[in-house]
View (cartoon, rainbow, N blue to C red):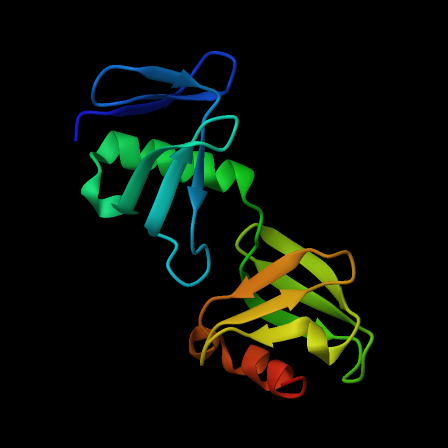
Length: 153
């Protein structure tokens, strides 16, 4: 696949198709950001028109793949919870002291309904400010974190 996806001097992304047509101000968008983050990627222009469909990221040249991942990570914000240090209370609302892939933080869990099980091991936690946190694999978390989470599930 002879395409280019790169960042211009202004910081905006551009795309050059296989036939040499350049499109400025493009975005890379995941179709299934939680369930299949490396499958079903669309490159779209500023109006949302699809310019390229990518069935799987591994089908791209390494530099294009890395740039698309960087672009998606810049526009998406869904921190992954890696560890629960402590919770203020086992009844809601409660404040959680957590470690994420973006650093330590706290979140306010307003109600147990703000924890959604997306699959057997994937959880989506929405805090009191509407920020969504992902637990990608509950079974990979440490014992202490799982024990705290079990009180809310």
